[in-house]
Structures are given as structure tokens and as C-alpha cells.
Image 1: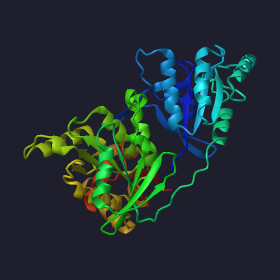
Image 2 (image 1 turned 30 degrees about the horizontal axis):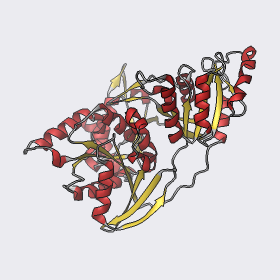
Image 3 (image 1 turned 45 degrees about the vertical axis):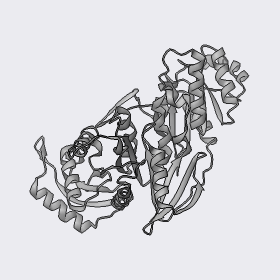
Image 4 (image 1 turned 45 degrees about the horizontal axis):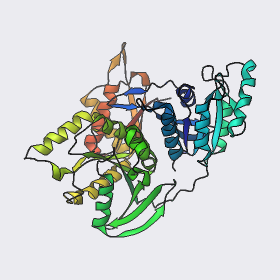
Length: 436
């Protein structure tokens, strides 16, 4: 099921990013260092009252030297388009400003639920500062303090109360759900049209779980597939073109509902940082991944070109070293016939289970080949391993002390599992737990 989306919107310097970090539960800088992945951190997941949701910090937008009201309008329009519920952030010390009123006009026309928050109410004596904010027309203002964390629970209570009840289209377990993600102009829509046009066996178009999602079901060689696409991934507009980082938000809902994610790269333009940022979301979501190099027909090449391009991909996408690479052309249909078999293979590995006795035979062989490490005179002891989940395959290793499980040895075990069972295209999770 697609998670509800909450956007924090408001004029600059009202504390949007501070409240974003409070809600997420950790201090997140604009750019986060993740092994193999860097990305602009304007999006995260949060939880309140056993409800998980996605949250957008519009304060992360780069606007340049455009006028203030233009900046505010761009932020508000993006939030309106993406969000199920909007937190309208204001500053209690400044009172109601003309810029606040401009935001209010935009949000009032949106017909989206809006929760009005008055930030920087740091002590009870300042509560009378909130009364002027009733004039904005969004009901009772909620006083909060991002600095001290006051009122955040009341704010989230009001937000969660507005979440829509979602009905999700359920598919049979053997149906493979996949989506295409990538920055603008890599050819996602052309690939979708090429895949469907080649098959010519479209079963149905079914409304998905979000207001702009379409699930397209089709069959090939007896296998049923669903392309989870969003109209927004094809949407053109100055707001999205001028804030390219928001292209990633267009893919997030589709990723959540997919088994396999196709990360599409433009062969003409090569690999840029934005490609890695977008691919990082699929990896972190634990989905199966296929890297698709589109527009391969437009490249001048010899017998070495493909291997050289794949080497560049491996260098840039080290965190996706398990993902197969397919070179295609949506325009000429070159190698397009190879795509669905690869998707099917990755889906099968993503859902594959390994019997515990077979798994532990591999584990014992691995330990014999590379004995467990020691730390401060203590040796890691591994008792046994079992698979506890699929999509992605997740393994629990029972040990004497999880702190002794070094990342490098965990990586060694992962490689042994892959060498034995394949698991091509899917991330693997290994969790160390004490035996008792």
C-alpha cells in the first residue's frame, strides 16, 4: 500500500527543516552520506500512532534569484501536487505576514487538508501570539516549538486524522509488478509504450492507489505483469523542470508497490549524480533492481563500448553491484526482448526462499574457507543462519556477540550466499542476533 504523503510548506525562515527533522526523529543534513549513495534529503519516512507516512521538506528547493513570492508559489504548488496533507508552517514571532497570506491563498484553492502550525512558540507566555493566525482561514492554529520540541505530538495528531483511507488493488502472488524510474528525459515513457506496444496483449487499465497512478496489466509467454506508472512521471511543467530534484518524488509511490524497479539511464548523456540519487531509493526500499541503459541506438560503438559503459555503471553504482544491466532502445526496439526475461528472473530471486539446512551447509563451508574474525581478543562465533523474510531476502545469523560481526565479514557471507544461490538483482539483508 502506498504511504500517505505529508508536505511542510511555508515562506522561508519559519523553521520548516527543523520541524522536518523533529518529525523524522533525527537530525538530517541536506546531503546525507550513505555508502555508495548521496542524495538531497528533502524526503524521508516517519511514524506516528503506528501509522507510517512519507514527509517532504519543501525548504530544500533551490530557487536561485527569483522573487520571493515566486519561490513561495513554486514550493506550494509542488507540495499541493504531491501531498495528501499539508502542514502550513508560520512563525509566531513575526505574526501574519503578506507572504503567509500568499501561501494561504494558494493552499485554500487546493482543496487539500491543511494543518496550520505556528512555530517558535517557545514558552506559554507566547501563546497569545497565535490568535492572529485564525485570519488565515485554516481553523485552530497549533502552537509548536521546533527548538524545544513542544507541540509536535499535537501537530502530528491533527495530521494523521486527515490521512485518507486507501483501497489497494491486490494482485495474485505470481503477478510481477514493476516500475520505471529515472530523471527526466531518459525515455521512461517511451520504454513503457515500447513494452506494451510490442506485447499488444493489454488486459486492463486499473486505477491505482494514488490519484495519478495507473496500473497497466499485460501478459507475455503466460506470465502476467503489471507496470506501475504514474501520470506525474510524464508530466511536464516549469515547476518540475526548474526543480529537478523533485523528479525523485514522482517515483517513490511506484517504488513502494513494485517488486522490481527499472533504473533507466540515458546512454547519450551518460551517468550523472541524479541517477544515483534516484536509484538509491529503490535500493533502500529493498526492491529488485535492473539497470536499463536506454537510447543505445544513438551511441557510436565498437566491440568494447558496451563493456566499457557497464564498467562505468559498476564504478558509479557500487551499491547496486547485484543489479543486472540491460542495453536497449525504445525507439528501435533493440534488445527490448531481453528486458522482460530479466525482470522475471530478478522477481523470482527477490521472492526466493532457501531451506535452513542447505543454508547452514553453505555457512559452514564459508567459515571453513574464511574463519570468523577476532576483536579485542574475542572471536566471533556463528551458530546457525535462517531466512526470515523475502522481498528482499533477509537472513538472521545467530552469534555469540553481534558487535563482533564486522561489516567486511557480513559482506563475505553475502557474497557466498550469492555465489551459491544467485539472488541476482535483489538486495540481501543479513541481521546478526545473539543466540539467547
